[in-house]
Amino acid sequence: MATSPQHPEYQYLNLLKDILETGTIKHEFNSGVELKSVLGRIMRFDLSRGFPLLTTKKVFLKGIMHELLWFLQGDSNIKYLVDNGVHIWDEWAYKRFKEAQVQNFTQEEFVQKIKEDAGFARQWGELGPVYGSQWRRWKASDGREIDQLSWVIEGLKKRPDRKHYIVSAWNPEFIYEMALPGKSAALPACHTMFHFTVTNKEKINCLLYQRSADMFLGVPFNIASYALLTLIMAQVTGYKPGEFVHVLGDAHIYSNHYDQVREQMQREPRPFPIMRINPEKKGIDSFVFDDFTLENYDPHPPIKGDVTVVGGF
Image (cartoon, rainbow, N blue to C red; front, side):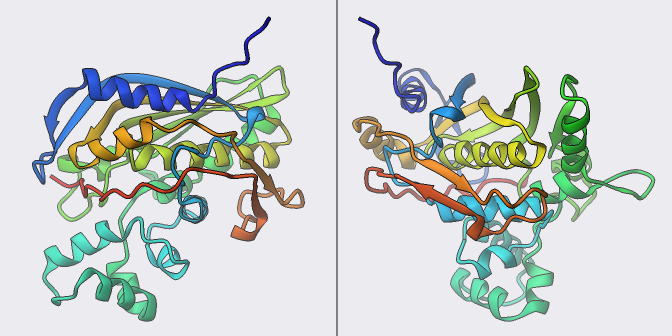
């Protein structure tokens, strides 16, 4: 008798176990927080088997969707996110504001000011050249802005057998000590580049290389975000969704998440949900939040964990 394939979420749960049991102990250089880390792991998700939104804890899909739309707009200011009730980037903008010592706002007061005051938001909501601006508005040495994602879309439509459809968010001009003073991105890209291929002129696949992977808080977002991006790219290029392949460089668990991870590892995965996309939308710039509908998501309850605010040097 043939056995059914193991639920794909076990790739994630098994990696959590691997890190806790075999990971090297390190310390985050800003805060000193302990973490356990392994190097070089891979997960694969067949998008025909459902949308890989983890079920062993409830994942904040609204945040994932708005963040991806923010990326696709080429935006680098948190105001769009704040206006839509998504606060996953607030800490990094607030960190810069505090360092400037302009006013003694709490983070909550800072975020409210971003929402209410467009001029304040333009000045203090800006994160610099983060993901979306690199994907859609990479600044070239001759003054041009290169739209990497549009280039990939056109190439996939015309020449699906080519192997060079890569979008990079890792731009050394804006990273750490390589950047001019005041020009570094608030958070150098953790998910650094992604690569699209087409198999049998039928299915589109996405491979993501993520150099730094916060397994408890960040990676569940990243899996769902790039799976959704692959579904969007399938729709705008006319192919069927294939695989999302997630390559992890430094995969780690912070010590303030150890207990939460152990709790999550005890839970049994449930069937993945289905993501529906408005079939009328064909252009990468046309999608809005209401174009996406998630069906049959039945997760275990959420598990809370504090964000470890990293970045800078």
